[in-house]
Image (cartoon, rainbow, N blue to C red; front, side, top):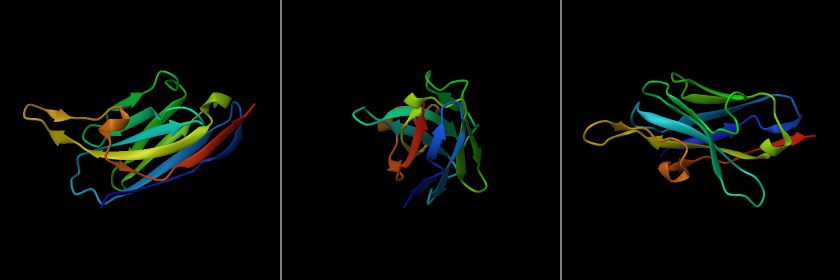
Length: 131
């Protein structure tokens, strides 16, 4: 079974930085995507960033582009989310999610930031940004 373990959340002042980690295990293929999602109280879970193990291709939500950076250590199956210039509106529970990259007959389908594109979910880690 695929298991994902997110860590690194905490309390930080606005303008500060945090680095989240997502440790993955159980993927039977070397082709997978890891995404970061977040959910603030009373809001829908939204995609923040994702990365593909095939080519390192990344996606970012407009709200975090330029401030957050996703990276991976494929050998350790760990994905990082470096969050800089944090804002109070970044406060949320952050989840990492995983998906197998599948061959669709003509190309590989690489999941992006859609919640329904991911099959495996880890527990969340809380990020609180104070003003």
